[in-house]
Image (tube, rainbow over all chains, first blue to last red; front, side, top):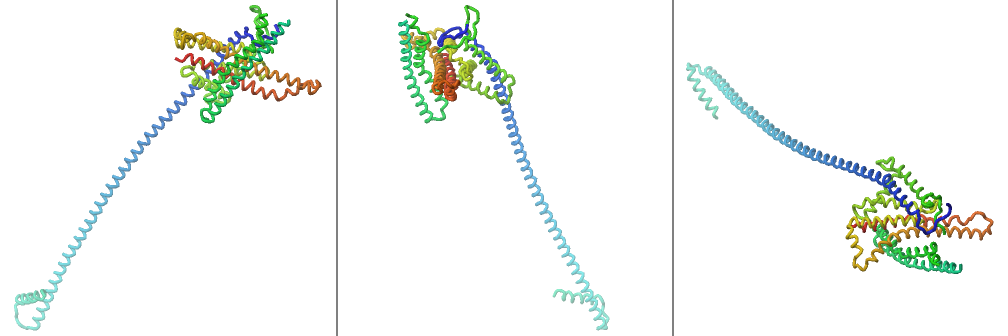
Length: 166
Length: 85
Length: 235
């Protein structure tokens, strides 16, 4: 049957359009909405997982950094300690060295003093002896007189002592 | 035949008169659109909300015009008065 | 002004006419089916091309349902998406020279009746039968006929709004075409077999009547459906 329906009419087309709406609804629901919503949910989960991972990684990194900082601080402290110790030791050692050196120098000086004293005494003895000998010789030569050597010696010694005192 | 012609002509005139009701929604919707423009000018960040609300209000305000259109269409295409003869 | 053409008749119950509207709807269904299959057969994690558009459409409809109807109404989203797609494509098919599906009262009335049934059924389900019935006596029992009337008038205004807009656009376009043809005839005294003035002007009008009006009416239809159903199912 060819022809047209009325411009404004209600006929079988209404039922057809219900069927068409139902078909299109099923198509849109099953082939457009559910797969895309599923995909979006999947993507959301994935992105969430990625973000969680990133957060976790950041936390780990933070923790590690803290640890490292702490280690570094410790190391610095230790180094300071070591340095202080070394300084102290060095100071002690240097003081010791200086003291030793001073002691040694003192020793040397005192020994030198003793030696000088001894030398002086020996020289003095020698000079005294020489002088006494010379005096004795001169006296014996000048005075041809029998004189006991001991008396002479004593006499001269007294004289020299007197001289030495002056 | 003459009666039929008179009824048909009167129906056409009636349809034309019915469509005078189109004035109302026209004025009303123009008013709503103007207010909408003002609102957008005052609050440009709410433009989408304003547009949606305005369209909805316009659609509801259009109802009277639609009723007149229905009557005009019925008068022209269904000719209920002719069938009464 | 004539209604849609009858393409063929099913020889049942004294002949069921299948009109242009129905056949065009089948074309739309076929196109949507093919497009959906092509898009969602190979969905990618990183979307590209039409997949972006499809995802945008789905999320937009879901967001609109969320905004207009409230939370926990996401199960209505596919229906709203379907009606919008059907309505918009049904109006836009007139750009291809076919008769718009929505320029037939049967189409819009069938959708409006579905909305009506959804609204009432949602009201009964959320409020319970008794309080739903009591709702018609608000605020005073005298208002009963008014309340019933306002419910019944909803599908009529919904369907006639959509149908009226699209078919009025179609009628005006047709009038302009025939007017331009007559103008060509007058100017060239019937010497030109081609109505040359029909070039250009109808295209500009078609942008308003077919594209803008069609999409807008589809949007308004969906919006009103969402508002009605949302209001009825609000606890």
